[in-house]
Length: 460
Image 1 (spheres, rainbow, N blue to C red):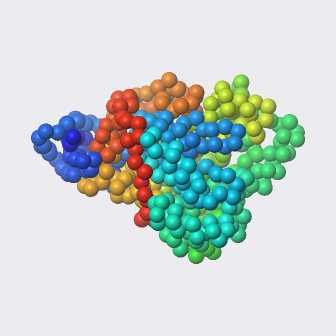
Image 2 (image 1 turned 90 degrees about the vertical axis):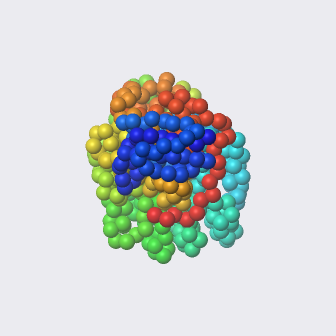
Image 3 (image 1 turned 60 degrees about the vertical axis):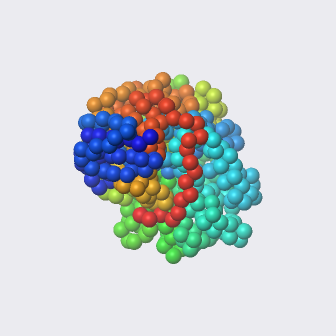
C-alpha cells in the first residue's frame, strides 16, 4: 500500500522544512507541500519531525566472546533498534576459529540474520590474522559479498601487529575498502591489569584504570601514522572516548589524513564514577574502552559540532547484569565487556543533543544517519529523505517526555545504563522501506522482514 505522510517538519543533514512525503513500493516517490493522493494510507505528522531512519554502524549481535554470548540476537536486537528509531545496522562480526578464512564468519552471520532481522542490515568483515590468502580473499568479500569495511584490533587475542596493520591498510586502500580500528595499546593494558590483580585491586573502577586515556590515545596516534605511510589509506576509529584521542584525530584531519571518527552515547553522557556504584553495580558499565572522566564529554560534543567526529554509533553488546556480568565480582578482568544501547541512541542524542542545544537537528541527522550511510556505502539508499531513497522514516514527537527504564525497552537484557534518565522528544513511529514496524513504541513489524544490503566503497 502507498503512504502519504502529511504536515511534518522534514529534517535532513542540510535542510529543515515543512512538507509531505509520498511513498510507494517502499521508496520515497514525491516530496512537496499539500500533496493529495487517492487510495493511500495517510499519516498526519503535524508538529512532528520527520527524519531519515537511524543508521547504527556498530553493533554486536549474536557475539560469542568465549565466556558468554551477547544477549541480543538478530531478532531481539533489531526489534530494539526499530523501537528506538534505527532502521539499518551494520554489525561487527565476531572472531571465528583460529586460522579461519574471511568467508567463514560471513557465512555464520548470514545464518544468524536470515529470517530473523526486522530491519535492514550489513556486516563489517573481521580480520584476525594476515597472510597472502587473506589479502587475496578481501577482493571477493568486497566485490561479491558486498562487505567493503573490515575491522582490525590493536588489542585482544587476535590483535594485529603494526606490520599486519600496514598490509591490511594498503590492500584495502587498493580495493576501495575501509579499515575500521579498535585502538587501544595492548601491552599497556596487559601490564596494568596484572599490576592491579596482583595487588588485589579487583573492583570495577580498576577496569577503567587499567585502560587509561593514554592507552587509547597512543593507539590512535600509532594507527594514524601507519595509515598515512600506507598511501594515506582511509581509516575509521571506532568508539572514541577521550579528548586526548580526539586531539590526535583532529590534528591528522587538519594535515590531510583520511581519518573518520565515531563515538557513542555512553562516552557523551556517562562518566567513570559509575564504576564506584555500590553492590557491584559498576559491573554494568564494563566496556572497552571504558567510560571516562567527565571532562572528556565536553570535548567530544565539540568534536561532533566541529565535524571532527562524523558518527555516533552504539557498540551495542549486552550481557546480563545478574548473569554474565557477575563473572567479574571477584576479578574485573573476568567480566564480559559490553553494554546495551541500540534502542536508546536516537532518543538520547535527540533529547541530550538537540533539545539541550548541544547540536542542531541537521547535525543530529548527519551523525546518526547520513554520515554513517555515506562512509559505509549505504547512501543514498539509506541515510536521507530524498526522491528515490528507501522510505526508512522516523517520526519524533518533541513534546513526548519519557523516563528511561528497563521496563519500557525491548533490548534483551536486564538493565539499561540510563535508568531513570528523563528525555524530552521520542520516536513515535518507525518505517522500514515503507512499512510501519513500530507505532507508539510497540513493535508491529515482521520477523525476517529485514534485508541484507550489499554495500560499496564509501562516497563521503
